[in-house]
Length: 293
Image (tube, rainbow, N blue to C red; front, side, top):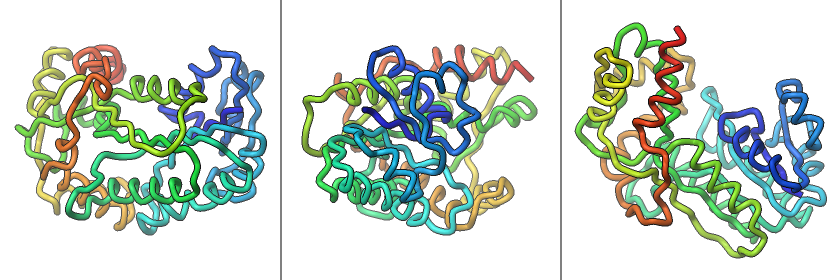
């Protein structure tokens, strides 16, 4: 039995869709089971509730051997610990109690980075908490998702721009969620691995935000520019969007760490490279979202 968390999220839904093409029994934890399509509810066991709830994870992990673990975004969390390790702690207790053998989790690059890296540091602390249970663990360590740009669809459409704290000419890796899901499914279906390790998932190439803006402009056939904000400007924008002070600071610290090389320390290899290039993703995902308006 494989348990899938966040089954209606962007990543969890793709993992679930691939698993349902197999004969594997699947159980999902869903805050809102009604959001699951009827065909999915007919095929899986559903445990309703939050996977941060001790009773929910205890029921969901019973008789399961493998878990796909994603901490859901909580932009209003009062602290990074609350968002990551505190949320994950009940699941760790249930993993041990129920005898789960393997966990595939979504995490971040940056192990060994010499300074605080906000959300990335919190993700790595979550990895340590899960690994401390002794369960077999594969942490998928990622740079930015290409899908992060979907948050900028309204401003790309209305103002022809997107923004961050990172230098426009700094090349960085980025990965499409479809490729992350593919790696996750392969590991979830493989009962031969043991122990604990990280699995970098780095996309096919490094691109600077100025390059990304150029590609978006070419695909949309309209000018789109990248704007690097000062930290105070970025904080104000994130606060206006409803993020808590702690999560805003966590985002700022992570982006400044990326600008200082957080995501560049992990070399791309045939094992860590994934196939979806940014132009293809832009044509298939971002452009339709922008043009739909």
